[in-house]
Image (cartoon, rainbow, N blue to C red; front, side, top):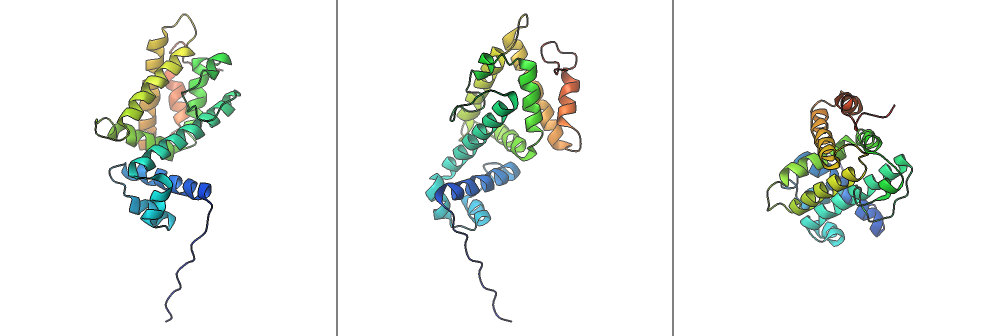
Length: 210
């Protein structure tokens, strides 16, 4: 039998190649975590060499940062679209005061965020895995997730209507979302949205809007 010819490599411009690398890394990190990932894994998934991958992201740590920043920005745009508010590039999902300016309240914001997350289990798993890993101070995403939690709590508290305690209700909302998402990832046949709405049905300020 004649030897099989190697498949020709698909040529892509820089932005498309970077998007391919980040998509492959997102899938692999969500399965294995950061410590279980190698740049060779990403190169193989993209049919590239390791130097080719590093040309676009600099290092394994640079790859992780790029994955998180890309996902944060995509989620920010998607959530802003759902809520009908404008969104400027580079601000991240929690780095905006536009929700407050548009009169969005906590119940609406959380319900739309849960609906959005229910469409992307791989991304939710990515964040769940990395958030757990990054509890150790030597993890490259340790500072990122510490800052993300502070920023998320601030953003949620800003849209809590009176007479509720903003800091308390923001903490309850974030804790519920994180916990319910873990349960959903273990049992994906269930509905994340239904779980959320049932959990907040008796929580003033979080009850899903009619």
